[in-house]
Length: 528
Image (tube, rainbow, N blue to C red):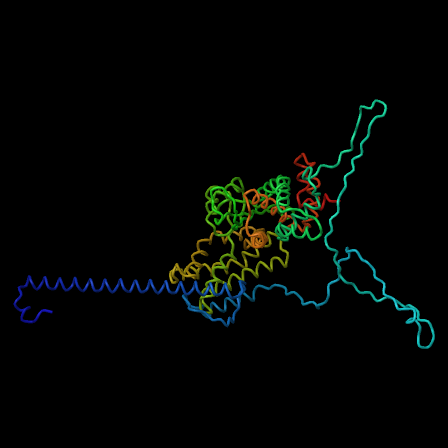
């Protein structure tokens, strides 16, 4: 610092320069402090985000994966980024819960269910020994009735050999004419596999998730050696035979005005141009009239947006989907597709936010509001409302809840860091908002894309058992068979029965009508 005497000796111009220099130094100091504060805030935000990630990882590792909300969670929360609902808001939440009534299921007495009546009954008679049929008084006992009880028994799978005997006839007069009776066309010509065996292999692999190498061991256990390579060959040949039915299912989906879509990962070991560790995808599409609902799986080497556009390129109607950008691009390519968002995907984001927030925060509020919307859907189902009545019921009950929810999200969007779990949940919900309102337009639409997630789940369960597909050919075969297996399940059709029926008749099909008659939802009318 300059001494007072030195300042007195300075000219006005010099003093002005000193003042400007001090002001510049002060500004640099303030700028430095501001930068340090910004850096501290940035680091604090990063620490909060890392705490959230650690908490979510610990929760996924050690806690239940259920999204069900529990009010009195003893685990506690880390921190809250947004204020808790006011007393008026809490009253509104209670009012919403009370204004939507869902008939409760009456609790039934527990007891053993009766065994199916269609099972074969084998009676085993238990009688007293002759010496026990004498009374102590000397008289002979008289039978007055039977005491019946039932047990379940199982007979392990047994192989049998079908011996085809083709009668040959010749003319003894001219000795030139010879005729041989023809046997029915087989699913795989010159193969030892009958339709029932092929159906068994496909059912246990694609419905019960039993890998082929385990089936090979099971067959060896009953004395039949069928190498895994042979089983794989059978699967691919059956898929080729079943493929025309999947083509008809695609047309059935696109011919109705409500469809569904989702996708999940798949690893393919031997795929041209890709390492074995890379991700491929199994896309799943669903739709069709309620009494002809079907699924179509498609294997794709990636998650490119074009795959959704390829399938729904000429589709007109509603499409239930999640927030994946491919569906927004699909709408741009084909504006006749109206996207219906999934409220339960939104809820899932806020469930994660609720795990790292204090009890009673915004995440808790959103979960409660979506639960109120779910109660409306349960009431519609329980009352079996027509589509038109369901539409009016939703607009009467749900619109008010949705409007309040939108207002709350708008108010808090700037208060939560966009990088935090809560901020991401708010951003996701607002980004999806136009699609989330679509289900209010038509009573046939659903509040979520859960129907498609239920169809994807069997594939993901199977994937945990067989882990990967060996080749692209195998992945495509799996897509074809999964399409038909899940369509059977959607229409309450026994998978094994249908596969045996279809594989027996497919080799003789020639016309489109003959193929259509074999579709799973037509099975009930044709099998007799």
